[in-house]
Length: 207
Image 1 (cartoon, rainbow, N blue to C red):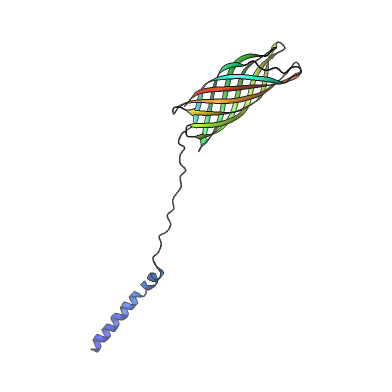
Image 2 (cartoon, one colour; image 1 turned 120 degrees about the vertical axis):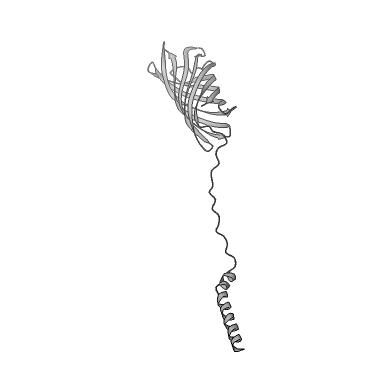
């Protein structure tokens, strides 16, 4: 009987010893799993504007002389065909890049023998695209020619404007643009300044 009691006592002691390490774990409750780390990836733009492009334009041309020794006549309204080419880079919805633009026209000033022809521009263009539509602005350097005192005089100036562009297909786009060029030249020792304004329709191809 004593042996049985002793054996029972030893079994109880072993069982108690085995249960001791488990008690703290059970008392502290279940262990929460570590938080899951999710890498956020910026979604790609719905439409790709990046790359080279080029096209044709048709412009309504107007303007006026803003500074001269004499009168300040308006430019006769005219129309002109043109070409343009450029390159776009894209960062998210922001699109930017250089563009070379040329408009061919030849028109006079109301009531005066002077004439104005052509406009060549190198622009820096930046815009915001929403899928296949982009709204943009630009600023650049411009050249034109003013006929005065019997000769054609080269003019330099700045150009700036706003526009919108819409892709009708993945590679074909149409657009409209409003621009102004502030030009100046020295003619006969006097400074002559004038504005050349255009409203332009554009159609182009993105490569």
